[in-house]
Length: 347
Image 1 (cartoon, rainbow, N blue to C red):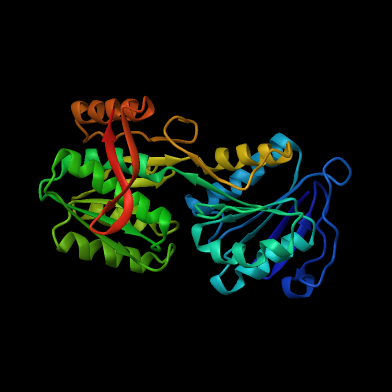
Image 2 (spheres, rainbow, N blue to C red):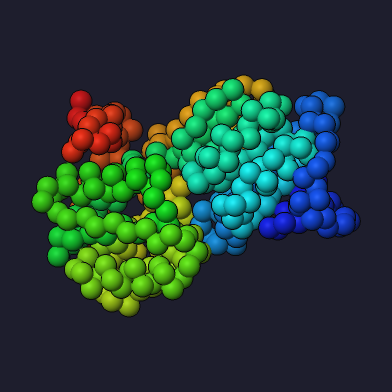
């Protein structure tokens, strides 16, 4: 069966029936025991900051738990549009209802996970894009830096103004990592290139995304790397309208703006989530940070290339991809300008 929590309510439905909707706050007093694998089934839930139809981050998380349902026969639940103030309540409610594995889909959930995990030792919490590990806490991360490094190489080869831009919804470790990769890749081609970043404060606000894009273009940026959810098409379309280039993210977004999109950093979070759910189902999950990179092309890869990208630039990027997989190019912790970051090295 599947549970759907929409903001403050959930709907229980199976193959033939729909159960009664209940207010989430009312349900928060539930003391339902945790279901045990083998007697009560395996139960997986995910809390999402946006809507499951965004064609990007949130949809990939939703598809991930459903892929796990298909593969493992698990009972699955989700809640969408979870505001910051509701994060602890949403995660706690899943734990009280006996979910074995609860995904929190975004690094912005880290504080909520840290606050409640110890109260629910029988539930394992996984922060997607998180930066936590503990007794019953893991993080699942795509190595965003690897994907954006390749995009940075392409951007530096395509720019005419030598000014690039990065737009994301919020500033936290995953977006900083992606920005760093974009910068490293671009500077490996043109060391003096300029990269400007901006964070709109909202992954789904179309008006803010378009406004930020137009401001960056007005300031001289002619290649834009974006990481947004429902608002991402606004960036790509604005870039296309202004005759500049952009990158898709999470999904292959070439079709949204084929004249502007150079390629996409495709992140199959659905596959990654299903993989970790299978690990948990086997009771092999550990309190660690699970990081997946280009060595798993079923999870992280470049999408289709736009027709505007010359074959040589495409092949140069693909060659670097193979060098990263072969560890001829690797990324290690370092300090730069007094800050902890990652630097590119060659073996």
